[in-house]
Every structure is written in C-alpha cells, then in structure tokens.
Image (cartoon, rainbow, N blue to C red; front, side):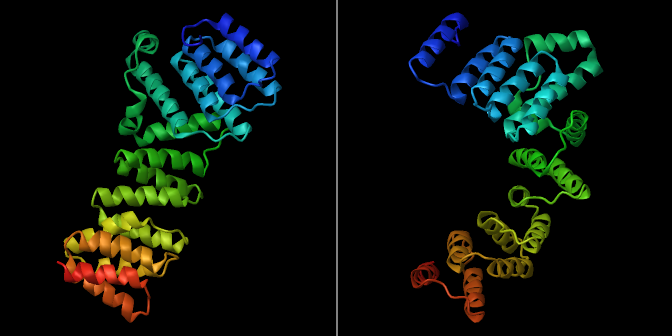
Length: 313
C-alpha cells in the first residue's frame, strides 16, 4: 500500500493493527517514513518520527538516513545535517550509508555552485550525476573536510566512528591515498584510530602490494596492542618473500608470534594456507624451524599437516 502511495488505507490498516493489540515497531514506522520520503512528503515523514518517539520507539540509523537522503534530494543540505545532529544527540550512530548520502549531496551542491543553480536544480529533481554506490570511488580529501566543516557547523563533532566509516569506505574501493590522508588528519586532531581502521588500511595496502606501508601499520598496531588480521598478514609475508625481502618477512612473522594469536592460527593461516599454497616450500620450512627454536608449540595435528604438506610437494 505504501509503495503504491495509498497512505490513507495504509494508516487505516495501521490503526486497526494497533486496536487489535499489535504494537508497531521501528520497522513499521520506518516503512511509513520511507514511503513519505520517496514521495517528497517530508512534513508527514517528520510527523511519523514524532509519533514513534511518543510511543517510546526510537528511530534507528536507517530511519534517520532515509530522512537525510530525502532532504538532500530536495537540495536542503542544512536540513539534512540538522537530521544528522539529531542522530548524534540521541546516541544513534550514523552508518556507512548515512555518510554516503551526505557526501553525494555535498558533491551535488558543489557541482551546482560551479555550474550554475539552474542546471544543478535540474539534476536534483531529475537525476543524480553521481550514484551513491560510486561515492567512495570519486570522493576526494577536500570533500571529507567539507563534510567535517558542515558537521561542526551543526554541532556534530567528527569522532573516531565518523573517520572510521569514511576510511573503511575508501579502502574498500582502493582509494588508499585519500584514506591515508584522513588517517593522518584524525591523528593530528588527537583521535586514536580504532583496530578496524588499522585493519582496513592494512588490507588495502596488501591488496595494492604496498608492503612498506603495510609493515608500518603492523608495527603501529602491535604498539597499540591491536591484532593485525591474519589474512592481511598472510598476503604481506608471502608478498615480501616473493619480492625477495626475506628479512622483513621474518620480522613480520616473529612480530605476529608475540601477539595474542594462538600459534596454531598463525601456522594454519601463514604457513599452510599461505606459504605452502604459494609454493614457497623452503621458506615455510624455515618459518617452522623458527617457531620450534623459539619454543612456540603447535598442535600435533597442525604439525602433521605441515610436515605432510612439506613432504608432498
């Protein structure tokens, strides 16, 4: 009913549902808000927000994000950021999609300033020149600063979660340069990166074969008592060996053994699933010797699998 725009009948069913003792939840209210936002009926959407709060049901991240996108589609960036402030004020954490829509609409706004309001308004009312799925592929560092500026204007201080959403989104599409600048920016502001942020950067560095940067991140993570993801470390160690950088690969391997990882986990991921699969047999044998000499014991079954793998190749 809501998809077809039959709001009167939808509300009738809603009231009947309540009268029968079936109380609506956040999903029910969000369905109405989504429909109103899609139809450009922002007043009605806001009224539903008020109604659900009166019933003791708090809007979630999706509810607010739908409202933010609706205001952005109408060109009302100020109202969109006002909704963001309301999110922060209620303790509701913006999602990856929340920032995707905000960046998309900021991009539109800038395009309008550069190319004329008339053309910009046509874009907003008819089509999006930048798809939300492509936001992270096209976002530059100055767009992030513009986002932070707008957030501060509306009383929303960018925190570690804000930086995290942006950095992780950028890393997923290989925008390492911009992600690193944001990473440095947050540290300059005295905000300590989270383990997820470090691991996203580490994964991106390894995928792009930027092993020098990856080593620095591993060192930094160990210093902060964070655990580098073993999948990324597998790519890093194997990549360093393939490039002939044995000493650095050994250093990373030994550093991991001093972390809180179970030695069997390290053996399975780096030796069996990593070096053996890459055909680096001699290297795998050397790594096993390192573990044994340092007294790092692994499960007999794991050891048997390693020996079988070494003998069978």
